[in-house]
Length: 611
Image (tube, rainbow, N blue to C red):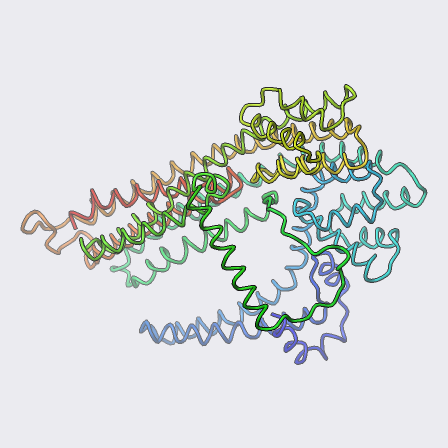
């Protein structure tokens, strides 16, 4: 894309530089796009000119291959090309504003959670630069991390003072809430006011905003689900029925059936998933921190090590891979419980060997091989993922009790290590073992911060636990009295879990509706392929001889198309159900496998034997 922009700017830059793009430049800046408005417009013009050429050439080639080269079709392509080009140009100009609004939405989502951490840092005596430097390295800060990086760029590389950088950030941020926060924060910092108290008051305000935004978010998801059910589940079925039954009489080609099944359903489903992912809250994954260079070596020029060191590096990398593989083979249950994806190493290998045997030895058709292969390979992963998510869900349900135990110890005058010891004696269900291990780390000489770090790595996969753990650690680094931070954390966790349950309850209804609609889809397909298409003159053995009520239909082809459409519909409907209810596509894998298997079983048992 960089090369394309440079080429476009060389061609059209002389014309675009003469014009002013005030609103577009502001939108580009708020969207975080590292380009000027005149270069962006040049790229838009270049792409909008290339799009019609590609459509005309590709469309003409397609018509020639398919034998549909007629004056009407050619005229249609030459009309569609310029229309698409003009639409692409307008879309280029429209996109920065949409991107800026999307960034503002994500910043507003992350503010209620991140503000608790900011408050903890301010209590520990950190100044504004230190707070933003920490935010710029934290993945759980979401879109706020990019804003923090912009602040640090102004301070460390452009030489601006923190107050100027704050005011510049407030002007350039797309989020109205962050803008208001920074506009008040700058004079508080300038006059030496109580920054910690200001962050505490803003946290309470953002919690109320989060509850109000939850209703809008659920309404948006409900609208999207209704659109998906109507446009992606029902409309393709109706179109398949029309083109399959009426196509031969109306002169429609079977290409339309292929396009609906293999293009419309997958592309529409993927577009819907992207649309939902835009409004979904951002999630981060806790990863083990890699070894970093010491601060004393920061900025030191590095030189190449030559072939000898490259060879040593390859040997070291190979040894590390062997160590990981050895650990997986020795303790598969433990490794898979931490990261379910490792189970694919076993399931995919076994499935590949099994499918190869079934296809060559027993002559199983390719569709059946693919279906059974996907089911056998993905089912263990789906089970392992569900087990892990249920475990993480129990941890998050018990997190509030864990924080209460620590808070009671802190308010009683105990230190954080002593409070963790008190919490290890409480009944916290599945979390009890992890808290006891944390207490054991402290008894063996580790600090409370180190014990919390190990606890966070063990309970990986839980965004809520990780954020709470990091906030406690940061608040305890300067002051043992973190009671007020714990109070904020407890209210934050309680609000988060309440909003999560509300969303799951609302979206659970639509998951059931999607499953019911898929059942209706299968029933309709069965009635068409298993009954209507089989109405004709009986032949030997009761099979269809050739004269059908809808003459000219290629019955095996239509049955195959409907079978593939049902399978594809089931796969994507399951993924969408998981994304809307569990905020993760992997949560819908179980639905996808079930619906895919049911669809194929219906055809294999009830329809294919009679064709």
